[in-house]
Image: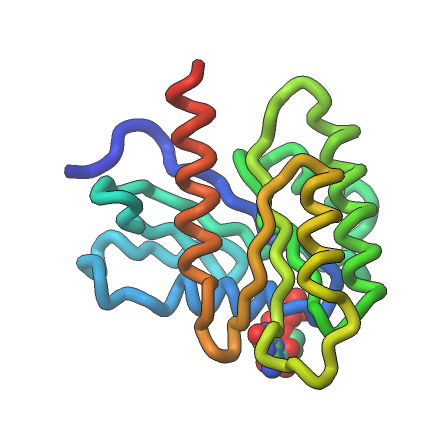
Length: 179
Ligand code: GDP
């Protein structure tokens, strides 16, 4: 059965080079579990599909429109306000991207003070063990401070990427159910 209501809008945030495009292609490319009708590509910056989470389908639009380097502040403000939920990515091989994730988390809080917006802090590229600059415990501690969930992923190995999408849907449902 198709889920009621409009799709959840999930926004990918993070510094350049952390793996947002890789996440978006995994999301858009995995058409195997669904009818192709269900996968509607809206240009290359947003894709919509149904994903099954805990036995129930959820319609998700994933937005990968963020480019911190080229977009102006207006565009950033816009993304900060359009999402129902956020995957806040950094690369475990790039400490600067970890600091950037903290800044973005603070901006999100500023833009959405009232809502409890689901956010998952995502430490990507965990396959690159020898280039690690941010430890698992640092990532976890940061998420605890920022009151959000935490996961380490590898888009290259397709490890935990779907788990992060499913995690965000679970949080959105919890929020919906508590309303
Ligand atoms: P974006 O700028 O955030 O969209 O980052 P991209 O998705 O373009 O990724 C930047 C680079 O990192 C590309 O060369 C990707 O192939 C690579 N990359 C992305 N995710 C991973 C990962 O999990 N592991 C490894 N080893 N490389 C990755």
